[in-house]
Amino acid sequence: MTQASGTTAYSTPRNTASPEPVEQLVEDLFRREAGRMVSTLTRVFGVEHMDLAEDVVQETLLKALQQWRFKGVPENPSGWLFRVSKNHALDILRRRATLGRKQGEIAHSEERRQAETAEEQFAVSENQIEDDQLRMMFTCCHPALSRESQVSLTLKTLGGLSVPEIARAFLSDERAVAQRLVRAKRTLREQGVEFVVPEGDLFEGRLDAVLQVLYLLFNEGYAVSAGENLIRAELCREAIDLVELLARHPRGDAPRTHALAALMLLQASRLPARVDGHGDLLLLADQDRKLWNRSMIHRGFAHLELAAQGEVVSEYHLEAGIAACHACAPDYESTDWPAVLDAYDSLARLNGSPVIAINRAVAYSRVHGPAAGIGELDKLRGEPRLADYYLLWSSLGALHAEAGNGEQAGAFYHEALKHVGSEPERRFLSRKLKEMEAPTGP
Amino acid sequence: LIERRTTMPKYMLLLHGGESPDYSPQEMQRIVEEYIAWARRLRTEGHMLDGDELGEGGKMLRGTGAALTVTDGPFTETKEAIGGYFLIEAADEAQAVEISKECPGLRRGGAVQLRPIVEH
Image (cartoon, rainbow over all chains, first blue to last red; front, side, top):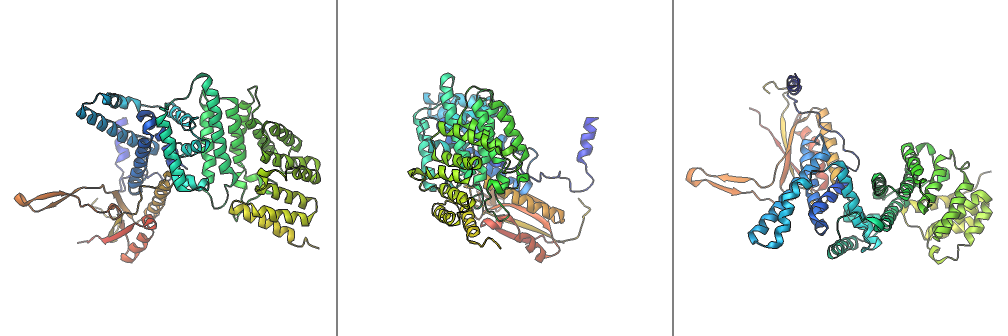
């Protein structure tokens, strides 16, 4: 019976026999699959052959591009990609083994063994792919690498970003990024770094490094995910993907991992409301909260609950707590500002970053009034690390405007404009200045 | 297959090159999506008949019997090579040109060679 019905399904009356093609690719599919494939291939080839793993993935994706544009997307695109990359990798391993046999070198016995067991090494489940990604995370964040290299390598391998994309995301030079990646891979090779998630005591410290890299990645994306630089929204999505992967893995499932996941999701939930119709930045106070991504907020709160199960309160906990205060406030005015200020006070004790001090001062102004906030910000004006930081000056501008000191507000906005980094930020400040200078009506 | 839906003339679109091996995964996905959208429109408008990728390499045969030669190739520069084809139906050549103009490959330095299928 099943046989018969199967046959009828295929004998459609018209000559348009081909099944309806897949019409839509999942967002970031190529990028994500690249990260998964590179991870599994690096396990099979070894860390020292990470380049080869990357080449195989690139060729696989090119093959998909060439074929799919004519034939349409296959029913299971991820399965297709995995199968093609696997076959390509097996070819390479067999070729290497044959070459080794011909040269009769004992050194090639390792390669022969690899080729023989390769087939089963690829018999992987979804869980094992996630294991591979986790190993890749810890490999990319190896302490032998600088923080910059850790971030770049994570983006390149797990994030599936190209060198020009990484360069654009960090406003740096393509050649510098390429060189950094080459050096990082060489270091991993020379140090004989293994493709593992570290065990025991080593794990805790290494987890912190991974979390820091993901945090940095997210912040870099979040800082200016508006306007020209769309790649930055991808950084946020990638950081969230990776932190959630870490959080659902038995080894990474720590309260501070959940805190970081909560922080990212609650922050990112606001991304759709951060720009207006012209691509201009909107402050928290001016955002249409109906645009906030509810499902991200729900996921964020779920992580926050899991984050509360530990003893230690990390910086991620505090920042997530602040984001949560915003997420549950129906509007800017009814935000629980005393709770926000509380969290910033604790954060300032843990982390002397002047940027946190600015945010604390703003929260202070919500609780104690703009004049008090200005007082707090004035204390930071001598801080050399902040001299070039436009948010100090624009915050002073905003509080002076609120306090009715138009002239000073204008002066501070002008100062802020001198230090602004991105085009949307520049437009935002120019708009504020225009508002200041426009007559305030009858 | 004997029953033909329409009597519109057919055209072959041969797609030459234009794809770079250095695309990022995200760029490659975007290109695939452009083709999907283009092909979908052609299908809904009833123009699309078929399409497929053509592999690299292949053989060139000349002569017959003892004089037969089989050589590799033709080797063309990658940016000139034909990567695949679409078979479409259009009211006339002008419409076929209009359809081809929208081919996503043109946006990246590729070329479309449009050839009418001769009906007898």
